[in-house]
Length: 561
Ligand code: AMP
Image 1 (cartoon, helix red, strand yellow):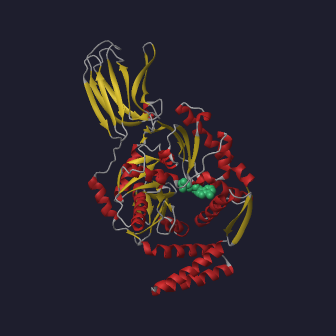
Image 2 (cartoon, rainbow, N blue to C red):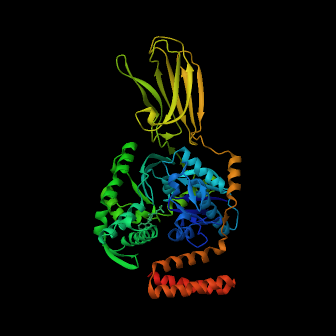
Image 3 (tube, rainbow, N blue to C red):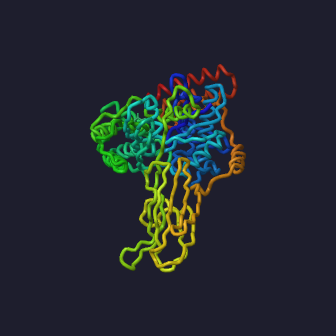
């Protein structure tokens, strides 16, 4: 079975295709969203999702989150003294989703279509693929998140040509993509975004607003207090969209603080964040050569688009109501499942050809003659520009700059800077050319970039027709199959927790956290219920455990009101 996976910054989801269309598979706790959070304790036990998230406030040193932001980099996370790369942490999330899907479907899941942000470069895509391999999932195809969203919004049934703007405000990232469905081909026309803008920033504004009202400073709070403050701020943020105000509580130095925050106050405090939203929208439209009025549909995805202040802002910006017919958290995973069905060539899905764009500019280093006889070295000459639809092939002719020059060195670079030194070096080819006065000899440099992110560079000496070719895979730290296997073995000492215990552990963690957050009678009551649950767990009697867990859960629900 091929499944579709949305490996998100904040939450991940897994979906499959049924006769009635794509469906989300609930996780072991019965939820659609699995937080992309991993925790590893001293004994090497791995916790994923809700349980790992709960451990954040109790054992912050054992927990990693938002690691998707560092995919494809060398960053390491240290959990209980053990080192992990972002793709290894992602692989634990994938493994957990895979297990849940297998338990739910009753069959093995061996392959997945995983979604990635449209702007993810080759390195990040390869890291995502490796994460799949480490979780024993074959990942032959990736789908860009906006494309997946458009597909989920019923695109595979659409017969009319449409231009979409996909507005994706997730937990930690913001992406705008412009897509066009034209004669059955879905093309990403442009992507733009901000890697450091998301729902979490809106949580931070809420937390700061609260502190400001109480004349408190964030740096005076200890780590646990900060985690608690953010948790309460997140809760208030999610509640404020349905009301004109919210009451936020926060336990500070044995005192329960309470503040009312109105939507108006919150909106004003978020003004700067809302302004930041405009830039990528403008940039994507400019790159696609379109006006706002030429967009037929605006699709919202990402949890933070549930915020009413964001929606109101978008209505003012676009002067139209965005399409909100779908759960913004689920669109990407559902789209990935449709793509999985397309890969399996299922009859229910119409074959729509999905294309992608190159998310960065590819070019070469040149010497520029800016005045007769005066040269500037180290300049960057773009060959395939950002947002060009791929596959793409472009040629640029470069002339000699010195008399009797006998070589031309073509340095292959990626980036947006005017200066070669600021862009990423990918490789180089040197070709020999006949000696001649400057400017008389030339080479044609052709870059061909394909859908699998392979760049082919071909240099042809114009006068002799001699060609030289090079293929750049764009990833120098790629792991070989053996290396992946070895790392899998190394990670095997980690014990992924058996599914059955998950619910018990989660209830216990929640209870412990709530105990820490409570005072007086409430605290004593929680203590009593925790103790009887622990006693049942020690005894190991199934029925007794279930009853004690239900009782404790009821108290938690009651106290959480
Ligand atoms: P995602 O990465 O798409 O799962 O988005 C997660 C972000 O959406 C987090 O910052 C959440 O706080 C935010 N979010 C989820 N539900 C809501 C809601 N009802 N109102 C406001 N923000 C929300």
